[in-house]
Figure 1 (cartoon, rainbow, N blue to C red):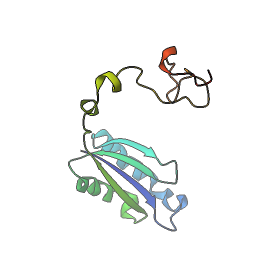
Figure 2 (figure 1 turned 90 degrees about the vertical axis):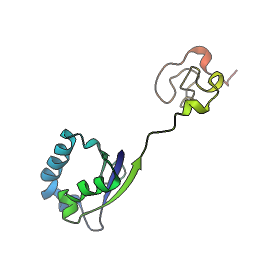
Figure 3 (figure 1 turned 120 degrees about the horizontal axis):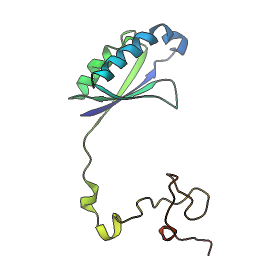
Figure 4 (figure 1 turned 30 degrees about the vertical axis):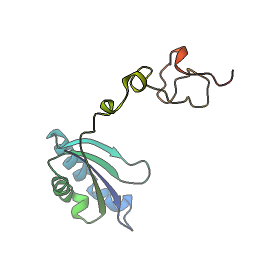
Length: 134
């Protein structure tokens, strides 16, 4: 099971507060990564903190690993957990003649005209969109 764990600093904790713990914290996460327990690791873009994707049997396992982190032991972080499961095969619910035919990216383009790449930056075939300016 994948479990997404994300933290936030407890009130009053700053980057200066955690600085002495960072080398040990990073080394601990790296060991778990090398063991296949941590699958992904990100810095939060909205505030100081991290997001870690664990590959574990349960949320309790993720909590056990997080409790062993130096910053957790020091009491500087609050953690939230989000367990994930395999998705329902969405294509089984769709009418193939309508929903799964190319082009797969039908997202309207950002600001430009038809075929400018849309959300992914990929070029669309000329017949993939309708130019609303006509």
